[in-house]
Image (cartoon, rainbow, N blue to C red; front, side, top):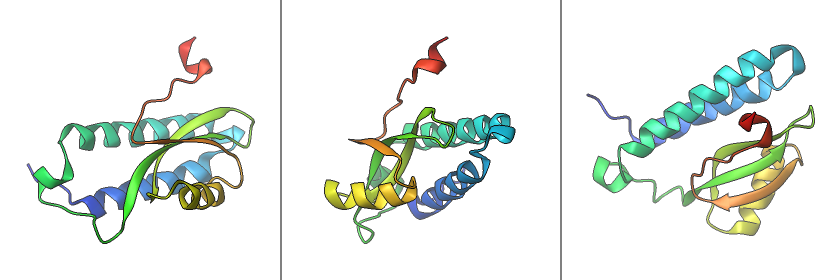
Length: 121
């Protein structure tokens, strides 16, 4: 099995993020859910591969870390997203506020599965 390097994994996640932004409209909610699930499946799969150092890849030059971002979608729903940004929380907050168009509510260091109320019922 071929293992993707870390930069390729980041690219795939960024492409999925771009699709999520495009699909964040009421008429494409089903597609949005499918893309979001594909992204979470990909992240979970790469997470189960173990630390980057054991996979022969390094991201030291980018000086980025994983953040779980909690934000409000355009339709008002609360959502979570896995993003890469600076280790500095103030820099990360500013970068991710731009990414989420000022709708960022919270940042949690690391890759975490956020449970949103509407996902429970």
